Figure 1: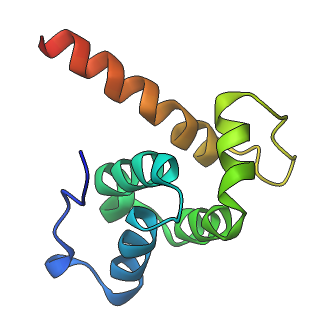
Figure 2 (figure 1 turned 60 degrees about the vertical axis):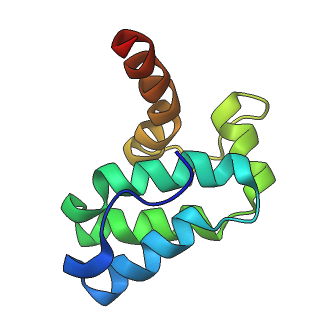
Length: 101
């Protein structure tokens, strides 16, 4: 997967901006974490979840990647249910791909 699967046409401007940012992180690894997560969840996220997701995307990519991979502890302000979902998303995609084979 290398680009958005979610069409931005039906999204409000804020969600469109978030979708764009999720797929253009600056680190390819983070594109492949944040982009698919946004594709799968963005349309149903609450305003509070959107706030939190934007705050997470404001954090430096190398740090976030390190939290996701377990290379560094997740700071308390980011250790939330939404971050747990973001960090679990790549594992779920891999498991789905294996089951589909």
